[in-house]
Image 1: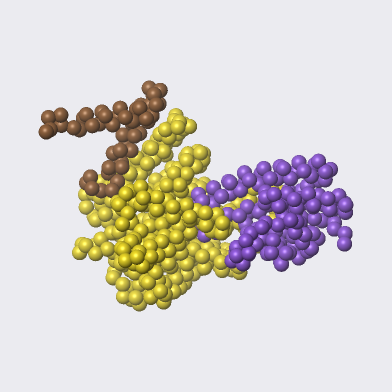
Image 2 (image 1 turned 90 degrees about the vertical axis):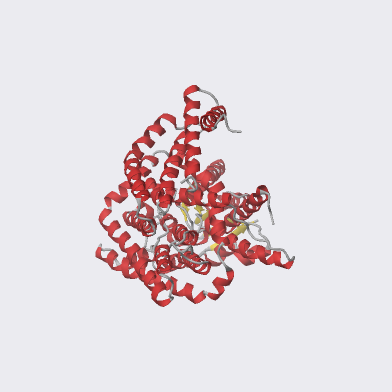
Length: 399
Length: 140
Length: 51
């Protein structure tokens, strides 16, 4: 219906603006609200159009798809760059152990449930396993900040474990569906060259050029992301894999250059992630949610149960008490951004027969489970299992 | 009723500064200890850590200014004002702080929302008036 | 390979980075430098004898 790219852009940015205002008003993250606004717009616009006998829909044009993918890559890069390398080094044993089982248990559990109980195809089951193995570092971080645990060892250990979980997710996504050919070899070879030199190169660039209005250091990071992303895509892997690893690798450098990270974040939140999250929501079918309610409930239960089976005993092994172990397990059951990225990967990638790895109904179910997993375990953790903490004098726990 | 330990809720709004004036007056009258608390709310269920960091950064800026203004107001009136900043849910954090420190009066400003908004979202005033374990004075 | 989503952006961004660095070294406006780099790219890759 809308042919003009400017009108299409106006509609999308209008929805993004609406989502932004709602998120400020209700105090819920803009990412979640953008997904919800996308769901409403994606389902309401065709319905309204049908009332006027027109075939209206929320258009996704190639440039919108590009901006959305670009947003996903930068989100993933920023997610990797937010790690504190010192914390990972200090708590490497418990965080590796907890993070690894936090990924593996739900990955295997959900994959098995999707294949044997829901009779999804092998590839759809693998996508489900990957999408529901994630942990939302952002949700965990926000909860830590509210309780002051982000300043304590236990909080830092939990956050480090979340990074390891997400690394597992990204690796699984990048490796499981890749074509094992010369493109993959080239991608691995170029990555092996760029990754070790990226921190030093980025540091040099920042030292020399930081503060310039033309932002050369950001262009350098974007160039590396696009080159690696392009090679990953050529190998049928996923561009978010090198983005996350590049973020991890330069995290130590960017910690001391918060202004650069701030500038990247401004571009990402203002222009790119709205397209990503709105698109993620618009692709959800309201009918599929209504008809797949039991599927959604089953997958959510399997995800949380698998996280319990994996994380709780591991946490106890590292001498965390019952309350803290439960709290850790529940927080690590959350997921949002990487879950939607994995689900979107499944919808946009095709098998040898030209079918997408997951269909629209499966995508809708997975994204709803991902959103539910961001909300439900958090509420339970905060209500019943919050570790005791002291309120601090003067300046409190957050200033 | 004599109040010995007064807590004021500061969110930087005009209403909260009206409430501060009243709290300062009461502190002078009763010779009470006066504290003010601000709560930085971070977005729930964020998609990125950056969103949380940005929200906290913005809140730090907003509350930093408001705190300074509050300190200046108290100083002019010859009252010592103890300032506290926390991160979390506004109502829950303030109620827990009141319980922890044993305040006997909470003074807050009235934020005028529409009746529909109050019905759907609830208001901080209502929440605090209902849950705070001490007397609550809402100043309009 | 060019159909790959990221190849074209990588090329354009690479050119943008070159233009940015040139603008810093030569102390000229970034916009001007980008125009010059783009014109140079077009001159290198365009067949002057094409009809």
